Length: 208
Length: 208
DNA sequence: CCCCGCATCAACCGATCGGCCGATGGGGCC
DNA sequence: GGCCCCATCGGCCGATCGGTTGATGCGGGG
Image 1 (cartoon, rainbow over the protein chains, first blue to last red):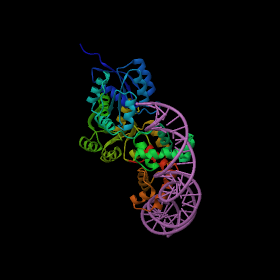
Image 2: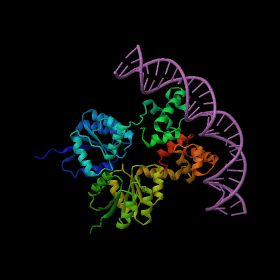
Image 3: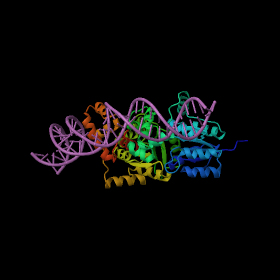
Image 4: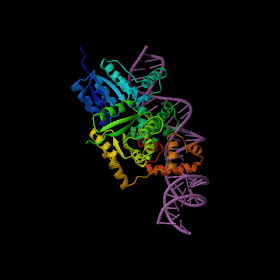
């Protein structure tokens, strides 16, 4: 007897990529794409309706909720989510794993690895792309400084180009507090100016 | 008689995306993928060797030369380049067109549009995704301020988080000159702080 | 040849930033 | 209860930034 095919739900905001993945996965007899979603909301709804074995999830979804949030909601229902994305920054990886992703694959991976990861994910087994695995290990060894929620708030305002006074007003705190937070942010990010902090924030995708 | 198929060279640094496009384009009888490249250098070499009718080019290529530079070199040999990418910022569009791209499509486009654009590009006809076309038109009507080369130099240093003195030293000019340039950069970008300038620069992908 | 855009520089000044000290209070954990 | 993390605030000071005005030289286009 042959095992039943793995039922897949695709989620990617790029129609061409979805179509490409659909065509690509169509070449594997034991993998069946049962649905496509172009947004996080759609993916959450379809996952609940179709209860696929695996949701293939991109993290960058343009409008609406992002891939991490979609992953969190879908994973909470017990459906396995395999993240398939372009970026491998610490922030993205950490958030996805924390949200309950079963695996984390890069689009740069070879297609065979994707197939294998899908089959693994269907059984709840974790697969990580080598670069991703490396970063996870490095993170375990030397936990990088993580910004607190409040510090992220400050950083978000800073990335709008606001001065300390405006940040203070926007967050209903005093200017002194803003400066205190900024000092710690500089420390954690390894910079010593606000421009540098913004650069790192954008580079590392620390902000939504 | 049937026309000979359009011969395509794929260029994208993500293996999964390449495989997806390959499978997708395989469904069209009159489109034949004759080669794949995972880097700009590879694309330039293969384009010269295979002389395809159309090169399908992503702009973000990770290591090595970027998609714009690859487009410039390939277009210079008379081969049509159809840009297929995720981003639709003014800077990307402008650079790609200026580099000689025959068309500019977004990955969010429907697959049928991609097929049509490929056939058009094979005959040298231009196709632009609607959002891209909009931006081009808008740019014609009200030409946005363009940063000069020197201003981009300053902005690049600024994005490293350097202070005025360090920027001056890095570029072998006086601190006063740096401030003058920064003032004009603020003007053109519509900001009034260095943090804001860095934010816009990263957002608009003004820097390589 | 003259004008204009671009890059270069100077001097000045008020506002802001960054670094430093220390302090309080709440919440979770053992 | 004690401990630690986090967020909150204050004050001080030197360094830096942002804005302004004005000036020089160089190159291209009309």
